Image (cartoon, rainbow, N blue to C red):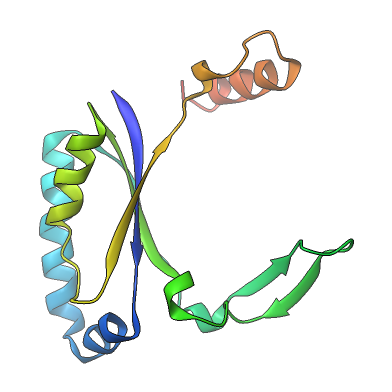
Length: 139
């Protein structure tokens, strides 16, 4: 099994349609999808994000980090939530992503999440992280 993050990206069109939708209907639709993921035993985590207007950006392009209020300038650079699934393959992650209850105009990016076993096990920082994961029940 491998973990994949499904990143839900919005567009101006999909955000407008989401704002017009009934919140109760959205909860019902997303809840049903989440229930399918749970029953299939593949859901690791799923979260929606607060409105991007409430965010801050830490820009590391200069010598000193610069903090500004608000999101990036373009909607296409924002994402509204994510799922982390533990599935057998990228193809399976793609099949689940096709079923996400998304609004027209949105996209879902899929990226594998490397596991701790893929890093050099003799590295002191990997050893510390492994110990922390074991202590917190993540391994």
